[in-house]
Image 1: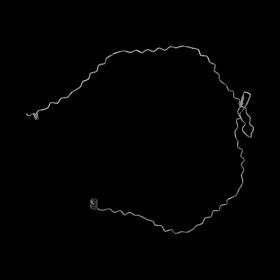
Image 2: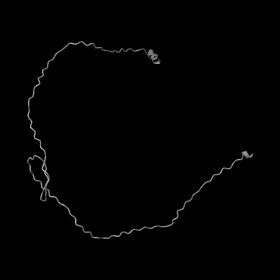
Image 3: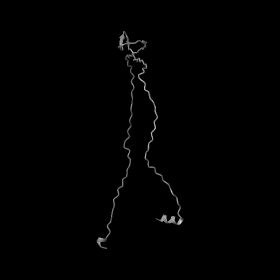
Image 4: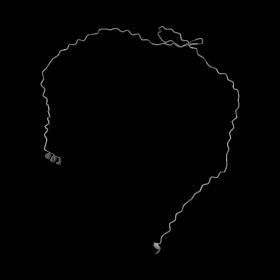
Length: 132
Protein backbone atom coordinates (compact mmCIF):
# COMPACT_ATOMS: atom_id res chain seq x y z
CA UNK A 1 0.00 0.00 0.00
CA UNK A 2 1.15 3.48 -0.76
CA UNK A 3 0.82 6.49 1.51
CA UNK A 4 -2.03 7.78 -0.54
CA UNK A 5 -4.12 4.70 0.12
CA UNK A 6 -3.40 4.20 3.81
CA UNK A 7 -6.39 4.73 6.08
CA UNK A 8 -6.47 7.82 8.27
CA UNK A 9 -7.45 7.40 11.87
CA UNK A 10 -10.55 9.43 12.89
CA UNK A 11 -10.87 10.39 16.51
CA UNK A 12 -13.66 11.96 18.51
CA UNK A 13 -13.54 13.71 21.85
CA UNK A 14 -16.30 13.03 24.39
CA UNK A 15 -16.95 15.23 27.44
CA UNK A 16 -18.25 13.77 30.68
CA UNK A 17 -19.64 15.98 33.42
CA UNK A 18 -20.40 14.79 36.94
CA UNK A 19 -22.30 16.90 39.47
CA UNK A 20 -22.22 16.55 43.25
CA UNK A 21 -24.40 18.43 45.74
CA UNK A 22 -22.39 19.90 48.57
CA UNK A 23 -24.26 21.14 51.65
CA UNK A 24 -22.26 24.17 52.70
CA UNK A 25 -24.35 26.13 55.25
CA UNK A 26 -27.79 26.11 56.86
CA UNK A 27 -29.68 29.36 57.47
CA UNK A 28 -32.44 29.79 60.03
CA UNK A 29 -34.73 32.83 60.10
CA UNK A 30 -36.90 33.75 63.03
CA UNK A 31 -39.33 36.66 63.37
CA UNK A 32 -40.75 38.12 66.53
CA UNK A 33 -43.85 40.34 66.84
CA UNK A 34 -44.39 42.60 69.82
CA UNK A 35 -47.88 43.84 70.73
CA UNK A 36 -48.36 47.06 72.66
CA UNK A 37 -51.81 48.09 73.88
CA UNK A 38 -52.65 51.76 74.25
CA UNK A 39 -55.95 53.57 74.84
CA UNK A 40 -56.83 56.30 72.37
CA UNK A 41 -59.61 58.73 73.25
CA UNK A 42 -61.47 60.85 70.70
CA UNK A 43 -64.91 62.43 70.57
CA UNK A 44 -66.97 61.48 67.51
CA UNK A 45 -70.04 63.42 66.36
CA UNK A 46 -72.85 62.50 64.01
CA UNK A 47 -76.03 64.20 62.86
CA UNK A 48 -79.47 62.69 62.89
CA UNK A 49 -82.17 64.02 60.58
CA UNK A 50 -85.84 63.73 61.42
CA UNK A 51 -88.11 63.87 58.39
CA UNK A 52 -91.74 64.98 58.58
CA UNK A 53 -93.92 65.13 55.50
CA UNK A 54 -96.61 67.81 55.58
CA UNK A 55 -99.34 67.65 52.90
CA UNK A 56 -100.27 71.01 51.40
CA UNK A 57 -102.18 70.36 48.14
CA UNK A 58 -102.94 73.83 46.82
CA UNK A 59 -102.06 75.53 43.55
CA UNK A 60 -99.08 77.92 43.37
CA UNK A 61 -97.99 80.20 40.53
CA UNK A 62 -94.29 79.33 40.85
CA UNK A 63 -92.19 76.84 42.80
CA UNK A 64 -91.37 78.14 46.33
CA UNK A 65 -87.70 78.32 47.36
CA UNK A 66 -86.07 76.18 50.03
CA UNK A 67 -86.26 78.08 53.32
CA UNK A 68 -85.16 77.72 56.93
CA UNK A 69 -87.37 78.46 59.90
CA UNK A 70 -85.42 78.07 63.16
CA UNK A 71 -83.69 74.68 63.04
CA UNK A 72 -86.11 73.34 60.38
CA UNK A 73 -85.22 73.38 56.70
CA UNK A 74 -88.31 73.31 54.50
CA UNK A 75 -87.95 71.80 51.02
CA UNK A 76 -91.05 72.35 48.86
CA UNK A 77 -92.05 69.50 46.56
CA UNK A 78 -94.11 70.46 43.50
CA UNK A 79 -95.48 68.67 40.46
CA UNK A 80 -96.91 69.93 37.24
CA UNK A 81 -100.41 68.95 36.28
CA UNK A 82 -101.91 69.43 32.87
CA UNK A 83 -105.53 70.37 32.46
CA UNK A 84 -106.91 69.46 29.06
CA UNK A 85 -110.36 70.09 27.70
CA UNK A 86 -111.51 68.10 24.71
CA UNK A 87 -114.60 68.61 22.63
CA UNK A 88 -115.64 67.60 19.12
CA UNK A 89 -116.26 69.99 16.25
CA UNK A 90 -117.79 68.69 13.02
CA UNK A 91 -115.68 70.36 10.37
CA UNK A 92 -116.98 68.76 7.17
CA UNK A 93 -118.38 65.59 5.64
CA UNK A 94 -116.97 63.65 2.72
CA UNK A 95 -119.57 61.84 0.60
CA UNK A 96 -118.44 58.89 -1.55
CA UNK A 97 -120.46 57.22 -4.32
CA UNK A 98 -119.48 53.95 -5.94
CA UNK A 99 -120.31 53.24 -9.58
CA UNK A 100 -119.37 50.11 -11.52
CA UNK A 101 -118.58 50.52 -15.19
CA UNK A 102 -117.61 47.86 -17.72
CA UNK A 103 -115.53 48.10 -20.86
CA UNK A 104 -114.77 45.50 -23.55
CA UNK A 105 -111.10 45.20 -24.46
CA UNK A 106 -109.10 43.10 -26.92
CA UNK A 107 -105.51 42.30 -25.99
CA UNK A 108 -103.25 40.19 -28.22
CA UNK A 109 -101.59 37.45 -26.14
CA UNK A 110 -99.12 34.79 -27.28
CA UNK A 111 -99.86 31.47 -25.68
CA UNK A 112 -97.50 28.48 -25.88
CA UNK A 113 -98.39 24.87 -25.57
CA UNK A 114 -96.11 21.83 -25.48
CA UNK A 115 -96.94 18.23 -26.12
CA UNK A 116 -94.89 15.05 -25.84
CA UNK A 117 -94.91 12.10 -28.20
CA UNK A 118 -93.52 8.87 -26.75
CA UNK A 119 -92.49 6.02 -29.07
CA UNK A 120 -90.51 2.90 -28.27
CA UNK A 121 -87.69 1.64 -30.42
CA UNK A 122 -86.78 -2.02 -30.95
CA UNK A 123 -83.98 -3.28 -28.63
CA UNK A 124 -81.36 -3.31 -31.41
CA UNK A 125 -81.99 0.30 -32.33
CA UNK A 126 -81.65 1.28 -28.66
CA UNK A 127 -78.17 -0.23 -28.38
CA UNK A 128 -76.96 1.56 -31.55
CA UNK A 129 -78.07 4.92 -30.12
CA UNK A 130 -76.25 4.19 -26.88
CA UNK A 131 -72.98 3.70 -28.83
CA UNK A 132 -73.24 7.11 -30.40
